[in-house]
Amino acid sequence: MLVMKCSAALAFLSASLIAVAQQTPKEWVDAETGHRIVQLSEEPGSGSLYFNLNGYTPDGKKLLITTPHGMAFVDLGTRRIEPLSSDPHAHPIMVGHKTGRVYFVRDGAVWYLDPATKKETKIAEMPPHGSIATVNADETLLAGTYVEPQGSEKAQQLSPPPRTREGRGHMLEERYNAHLPMALFTLNIKTGEKKVLDRSTEWLNHLLFSPTDPSLLMFCHEGPWHKVDRIWLIHTDGNGPMLVHKRRMQMEIAGHEFWSQDGKTIWYDLQTPRGEDFWVAGYNVYDGHRTWWHLQRNEWSVHYNVSPDGTLFAGDGGDSKMVAHAPDGKWIYLFHPVPIPNMGVEEKDLITPGVFQAEKLVNMSKHDYALEPNVNFTPDGKWIVFRSNMSGQEQVYAVEVAREPVHGK
Image (tube, rainbow, N blue to C red; front, side, top):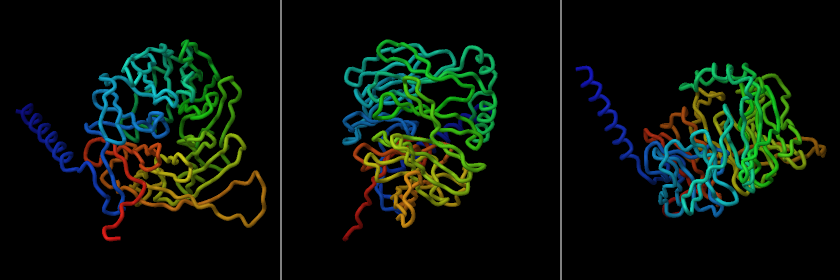
């Protein structure tokens, strides 16, 4: 009897989810914002890449997504889905900026897939307790990290990946306090040669090559943000590492760093102090100049991103349980940066301040922020892509940056 009741309950739940998905339109105009939203994916359980990873082909016409069956491209013009791999265990890294190859990890090795032929090529095995996270601009190198052999036993004793937000907080503390010996390395795509760039007992994570300079790699010291100086740079010849942002007050935090698409600026979430005052801060890697854009509590976002031309920013909002504790933060935002005119002294080392004027794009009130939306701009700058479970199951969406004209005006 119990089995029959459970089966009936599961059947009812499945039918309910299908009904919700069928009721959700594939295209609509948000009634509160006036912006058009389209669903790019077709299957529940589809997702887009992490916010700072390139998912677009070099011609800007296709977007890489994941589906329950593997990897696929979405044609941004026709919205046609093009399956690439039927292996659900293939974990995408990113799309190459130069060739459009799809780089991915599977069965302890790193591979690339030629989108024209669908041929998969194995590059190399990954080191034990290792990962590959990024591909450089000219697609000659991959970069990743691994735990050194003397730390492998301790690494195995750490808690498994958490399923809850509370569990993630515990995991961050435990992993940070472990101080496992780690190596930061590159892998030659052509030869498979491994080269260690740096060694540390800090938790090395969040690697991302510059989109334009093949020799410049950003990475972080991971852990509770209020305990780490997080953002670092290193060159592939081993020059560095260099700290990008140094804490100036107690409980100041900086993180979720990402590159501008011209490769000149590293942008990141800055809070002075944590949960009280909110900025999107920028550091120019060539001249060292800093720019800080201020935003309000409700506008704080899990992740930010910047348009290809650098004139607009986006944010994916957050719920009241997150660091900003925003009472009305569940929106996809478009930010218009407004500089504050300088009527004072001119000193090159001073930060250039400004404010974000926020425009709401998508009402995310039905979204569960346990799933991060991961906003990013399309290459033409006309759409912002994000993932959401607003329909009950995860799908990939895009919202148009331009507002739909009001009928009769």
